[in-house]
Length: 65
Image 1: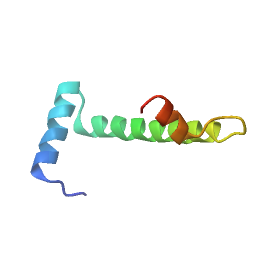
Image 2: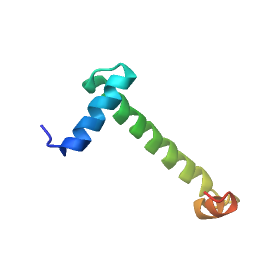
Image 3: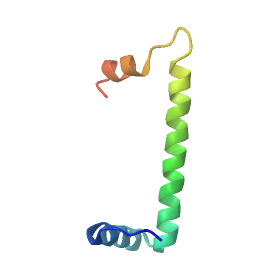
Image 4: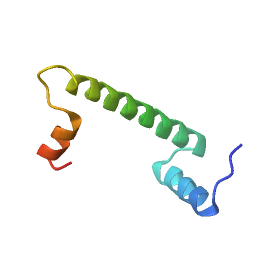
């Protein structure tokens, strides 16, 4: 069990309600999306580190990210 600030817990409850999901399903989907995003970022960083490619820092600077 985790303890959350009341405002954080309320925001989670509201977001889950607005999405039509139970809190458990909402958090499960949130975690799944986070893990997928993290994996995508790692793959992008690997691809950008290959010879002949620009670095992540150069890409961010080029596109003002």
